[in-house]
Image (cartoon, rainbow, N blue to C red; front, side):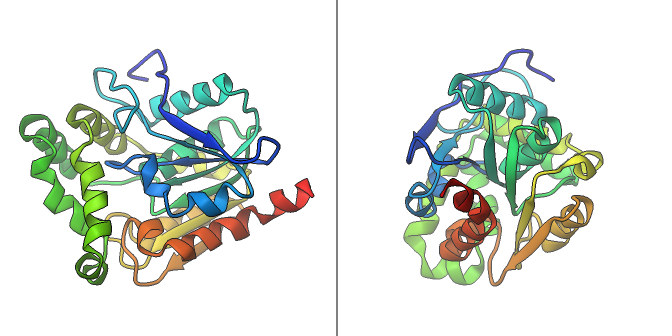
Length: 264
C-alpha cells in the first residue's frame, strides 16, 4: 500500500435499517451521484450505502499515488465505523475493481457481488501515464472532452445533453491530484490471480459498445470467478447505469433477489 492509513470516506446511508446492506462504489472521475437513477428503487429494499473513493467527490485527497488496496481498505474502514459486518457490493469501473479486491480479500463479509463495466487488468500503461500528466499539469478541463466521449454512445451523447453535462460536471470537478492518483491505481492493478478465490455469487455487467472496458474484459472475469453470471447491456458504453438505468437496476435487483427473499 502507498498509504498506511485509511481515510474517512464521504458517504450517504439510507433505506430501512433492518434491510440487507448494499454498497455502491463510483467510477473514476465521478461521485456517488452517478447512482442517482438506481438509488430510489434500491433503497426501498436495501440499506443503501453510497460513497466516494478517496480523491473523489467529498472524500479526502491524501498525498501520493494510490493502489486498489488503499481504496479497498478505505471501504472496509468505513464499513467498520458504521457497524456493517456483511454487505453486498456493486461497483462500476474502478468501483468494480475495488469490489473484486474486497470479495477476494474479505470473502466472509461479501454476500453478493455486482461488477459493472470493469476489468481485472486494464492497460496500456502509457494511457494512464498520459492521463496522470495531463491531470496534474493541465487540470481536469483538459481531460473532459476526450474522456466523456468514452462514457456514452454517440446516440446517447447527442440526444441527452443534460445527462451528459451532469456527468461531465462530475469529472470536471474531480480533484486532479485525486484523479491522477487513482489513475495510477488502475495502471498498476492486476487482479487476475484473485478472481478464482471469490466465493460470493457474482454478476458481471458489460456495455456492448464500451471502448474503455469492452465485453471481453467482463468475459475474462466471468470465466475466472466460479459460477459467475454475465450480462451485456446492448447499445451502451462505459457508464451503462446512466445510459440504460432501468436495465442495470433490474439486473442488480434480480441478482440480489435471494437476499430480499431471505429477509421475508
